Image (cartoon, rainbow, N blue to C red; front, side):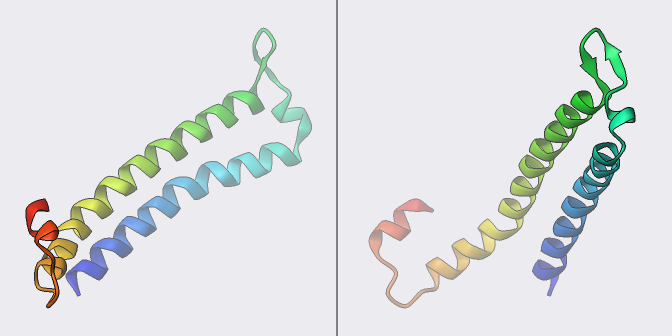
Length: 94
C-alpha cells in the first residue's frame, strides 16, 4: 500500500508541475498578440515560454524517473530474488 501511495504522489506531482505551464501555453497560443510580445530583440514571449515549458518538462521527467526508480527498484529486486526459477545471472546483479 505504501508503494502505491508513493507512486501516486509522484504521478500527481508530475501532472501538477506540467499542467500549469501547459495551460499557460494554451492561453498564449490562443492570444496571438500576447505571445508575439517582444521580450528582447526578435525573442517573443511565446518563444520564451515554450523554451521554459520544455525545461520544466525535462526537469520533471528526470525527477519523476528518479522518484519511481528509488521506490520501485528495491521492490523489483526483491521480487526477482524470490522468483522460483531465478537464474545465477540474476543473483550476480545484486
